[in-house]
Image 1 (cartoon, rainbow, N blue to C red):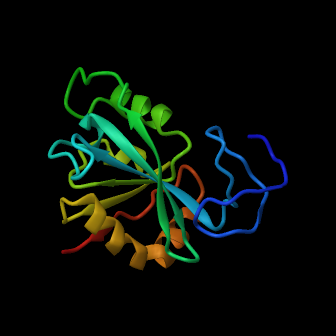
Image 2 (image 1 turned 60 degrees about the vertical axis):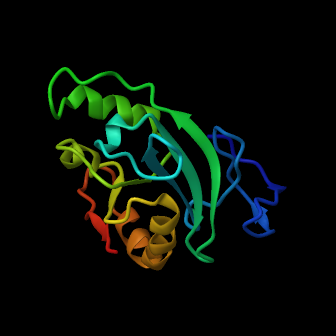
Length: 162
């Protein structure tokens, strides 16, 4: 990861940042997290498991202000499952979303036990991504707390209720 000092307005707020990620977005890790939402239509979460989504909407979430900005759409280029809960599928999704910290879905499959060691899984009881992200804002303290856990330690699953 390249570290530079520069001013950049992400429409979230103006201030000096010190980290630039692989996509050119600048943020301070303790204040911002990247969220991936699995979707087939860009509006609702996929009806299938998170790993079977056609693509992922990537958002930058400011934990201090609660502001969320869509920064990217990423096509799901992961491998096909050879069997239900295929560990190779979990590895493929993990590599595809390696710069993301939080995964949000309506349904997660059996690989949730594997991904909890690297990602924070959030399950929404609301199909609309827009509504779920509004509910997610209220969970910023819990998200921050879970993301402080080291890689390899299971993160608690957060449920967004209707």
